[in-house]
Amino acid sequence: MRNFRIRLTQVAFRSPFTRGPEQMRFTATVDGVAFGPVGGFSRSCDNRSVVALPDFNTLIDLDARPIENGKPKAVDVELTIQSDEPGGSRVITLRHSFRYPFFARNGSTTHASAIMSWRFEQELSLIGPDGLMDPFADLCRESPDGPMESTLGSPETRIHVEAHPVLPHRGGCTPRRPAFPPGTPSAFTAQGGARRVDLANGEQNVIWNPAVIPIMPRGTTLDATNCSRFKVTYYRPDTLNLLEAGDDRLEWRVQPLTNGEATFFGPVNGRVCSLHGVREGEVMLELRYRGAVVTVYRALVAPLISIPSRMTILHVAATDPAYTNAADAAMRPNVTPAMVAGHLTLANKYWWQAGISLYRSRSTAIGRLPAGVTAANVAATAYRGVFIAQVPAALTINIGGNEGDVGSLNAIDLVANFTYGISTADGITLGEACLRETQGRATINDRGTPSTSWARPSGVPPDDSAGTQTMNLRQNGVYNATLGGVHNLYAMYLRNHASRFEYVNTLAHELGHILNLGHRGGTAATPPAVDDGLHWPQEENIMHANNPSTIAQDIDIIQAKAARASKLCTRTRA
Image (tube, rainbow, N blue to C red; front, top):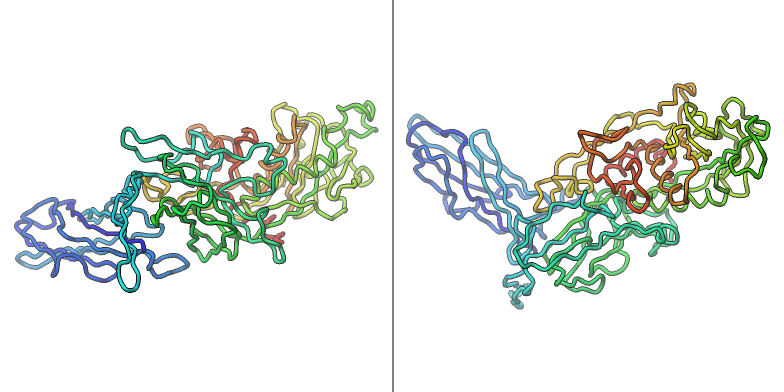
């Protein structure tokens, strides 16, 4: 049972409610049921600008709320003010809805004529509006026959817990945190992202705290390799010594939001938990400390999308004047068919958090060919979906104004096409997404609590309530017109990289562009090229323009929504 108390504390009038002496009567309801002083509260206000409200409070059990549209029903509060004076009366009503997730906080509700101040506070284990919890309380556990036992809260006081969706996160995207009293012990943090050893040797779900909990294809055995993993990233004080598993003080729960459903895989008592998707929609993960919700995590539940992909490695053709000999490393990219096949496996470890997975296409058809390349110049390798093409040097060395021809070489419809060249003309560009199609709109919105990647205001105390986040989408590929207005081609190229992790990071980033994502980073004053309009988080997002794989790893909820709406995803769902 989670009891919350609603208190209406005062009304401040924006201007004299009426002129001259007057009698005001205040009455209140919660969910249509009256509360407060019996018969309401009246007073002679005599042009007062602020009126304190005595005894306007009521207790409700939030765990007993009815479910509407897949989540607990909002708590609707109304305060009615009637002003009686000679010649008639006037009535105004102030309304406020406390919506799930239910966090303790102070606030106010504005009307054209008045402002109502209120407090929403948890009884027993108190979580204040500053986001800190104080377990000092007499806790009463009940049975159908009445109270069973009463216990005193532990000596650990004033705590704050986070399960932040951005990993790794550094100072640039640290959420707002409450101020602790002097002398409070330091914090525990577990912020590290996936290390290169994890990306190289771990399972596909190596990135924690994802935006999407995938629903696996029918017939898949659900196990530790295909669940979504979540963990606490921060708590203070560290003297709480919260255990990773087997900590009876902690309990994870799943609450449906927009009809989403997920089921736990393994223990639910501890700092970490794992889940599998069951039904599409949104869910809220609640972490409770001794019954009180101390942090929440919003995630999408959606079917795993499998995208067919093909890779083409461009060698300088022996017939080109620039060709030297087959042993010259300058005549081919520094990759082999086996290496590029492995790049997909590693890239999937980034995109798993969006519920998207790449696989090598079974098609052996020769795709689009630019001038100077014939079907005889393209050959399949022993690795399914991997080809080698003999091309003019201009299509692979110092790639410049011909990116569309390079990226789309051997590309086929509704497949993610990756081309490997040797170098770029500017010596800076690592790769480029050349062809894509939007879903017919320029922006996408996300509204929920917590906000996507806890963009401020996040809705997580002590932050204010979350608002709507709007992200710019990339428009149709700039090379479509050059290629005769082609459609259904999704293509990109990469130049030589220093390591496979650089290759994979670039491939995963450019895949984001193919799926209509812009760059993340910079500031509103100095945005990056093809800016998505959101500047939170910056350094840690996979769509940062140039950060390395150990930093740029995150894909957030709004990006996952946008990518999954791409025609490449909606036409290839498996």
